[in-house]
Length: 196
Image (cartoon, rainbow, N blue to C red; front, side, top):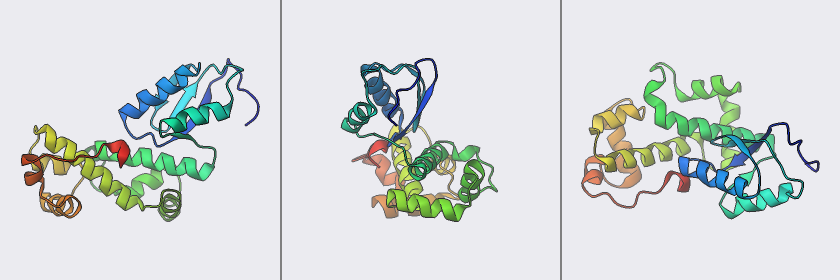
């Protein structure tokens, strides 16, 4: 994009690697430091109103890259990032999704694409499967909830969308090397969600 956006119109920027609330604050800080007026911000997407004539798209890209983010221009990369955002939200709100609706149906319905296409696109764009990404996000969320120590393990399993406590426990042990109960007693080494 070579033309500067009109200062009176909103411009939507798609941004890669925004996965947590801290990312929202970081991206907003970067854009505002450049003189852009952020109207709305959510994971993977920012709407800006003003764009000073002295700021090039490359300058914005470099500033974002310095913080571990990137502007997305490719429609396939944009779709992969939208998938990530939906999956992250799914981890935080899995217990709100109807029990009969599986993740593949949920994603297809939300994005309007066949799940096979979404799965192949996600793997190509990110280097990991949707299932692997979802598992890693669930495990990191489980670690956070276990470290908070407020919810019973059964409630954590339910909140994260696991079909049973044994399924949750087995997957957690496979990924972390200890059971949720053991992890809760000795909390160590939790990776932040934006590092997953």
